[in-house]
Amino acid sequence: MTHRIPHGSGAKGPDELRRQIEHTRSQLGDTVAQLMDKADVKGRARARAADLRDKAGAMTVQLRVSARHAGSAVQDRAAQAGHLVQDRAAQAGHLVQDRAAHAGHVLQDQASHAGHAVQDRAARAGRSGSSNVPQPLRGALRSGMRHPGAIAAVGVLGAAAVAAGFAWRRQRHH
Image (cartoon, rainbow, N blue to C red):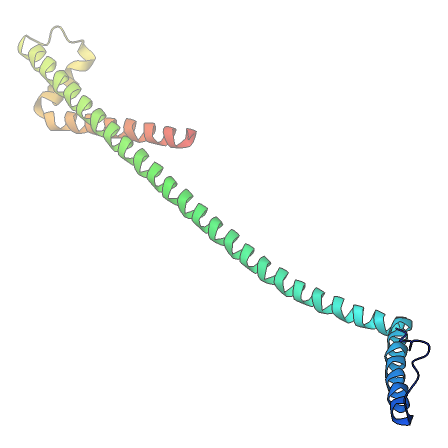
């Protein structure tokens, strides 16, 4: 920045000349300082590197915080999914148990009805004479007539075994 004094407007005395000289020195000092700053490539590079280090440090902290938040969010979602799967598996298990129990009861009822039907037929056969029953079965028929509860128990046990087999088979295939 050059400040020129117009031609013909010289200093009007030694004091004014000193002020002009002082002013010119100050401007010259500022200009030299600016030139030195521009010429100090090493210093400018250090200052830029320090700025970049500060920015990188701040960015690193910010990325770590973001990563922690993301990790926590993923953990929370995984836990929720795990609980949901557990709940659904428990519901499915209860449903299978209920259906197996119902099938067992149905089979038990059917076996009981079948046992009563066999008893009734055996009783009718026994009353009408055991001549209609083949010889090897006549002893078993007489025993069944004397102990009807045993036949019913065998029927119930058979029904329970069939129900357990169905439940086991269903569980194995699912």
